[in-house]
Image (cartoon, rainbow, N blue to C red; front, side, top):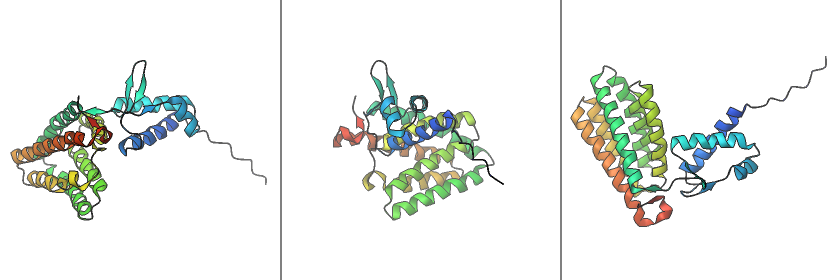
Length: 232
């Protein structure tokens, strides 16, 4: 019996757009696409061998996430964050995370959520011990994402997703031990206060963590604009 040749499977445009968005997102947050870089639909379509439609859709998604900035009559760029931008990202994060923390401690789900948070802190401590600062940063964001997810609020998580994307853009500048060696200790304090049901203590530890992050990020300006943060 002769088999009919299999029909070619054509991936839907949405799939191409999602794949392209993920590739561009990775290139932005790992610094391959540096702050200030301009993106061209034509160049990207030629490089990846796909039409401009999915490229355009991918770019629009990343503009909505805050990872790209569209400037009328100029084009699309990887944002160069100012000190004010960094402070604003962490100001918004502080509001959402404080609400999540209060909710977590006030509900009966706190112990289950604590176990998840404790796991991320333990991963952070292990990564710090072996000097894997990139992993430390990754587990840092996993911790805060899990904190907000513990509320079960889809709207809160949706808002936080955008802020985490912008945070990744901020963190492009922080790659060394000097900027991240203290993160495991800070998160352990937050986690332990949550375990103990100490709302005020947990909020104070969270606030201190955010304040120190802003100081570390804005101080990178002293090492030059290539670090990705510039003063306004």
